Length: 297
Image (cartoon, rainbow, N blue to C red):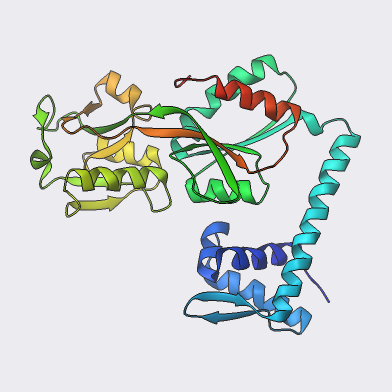
């Protein structure tokens, strides 16, 4: 028997997401690659582990046994890491955090700078991804804390709203819409640049288009806030983004903020963690600092 740790992680991802394609999206792998790893496990164990059906992948009795053992294996591995770190006296000197794309790129670096100024010598890891990726990192214990736009609705996670983030509709500086008081009717015929599915910003963008009764408008999907900002600057369309993504461009005049009524809704910014998970002293201190923030640092 030759079981790989990677194969077990991929197998558990299929079990937890319910399908090979969803596991691939979580792990940033192709669906055929996920299937190949599962087949390799089945060959190694001489057992059929997963049944595929219209509703997704389901465990066979043998698969259930492997899933239980795999979870136990990873729990032991996590404990080994913690015990070794504690033996070296470094367990409480590490901070692993994540942020959804805008917050991870524009807020967390400033927050970490403020925190590290008072907590010298920490080992720090910062991850940035869309909402789905951040939730997976928390659930898989790859990070302990996250700052997310919106509120993550997951039974294993708990979140606390810390402040509100304003969304702004922006256009290139040569846009004929600039400087006018607009209504949704004035946006007819415009192209909207939207974030990918799985991004909290995409949810807010879809909501705004619904509020403005513009769901029929031409829509392009643009991955990452930075790419959306550059696409607007290139004249490819309009984008609804966090005011902090485009603050410098608005000051320089490269982009213009469009004045539209009704204005886009504000969205909450939440501090998210695994429900019931104990925190180290460093993590507790970071949470206390974040919870005292009432606006963007």
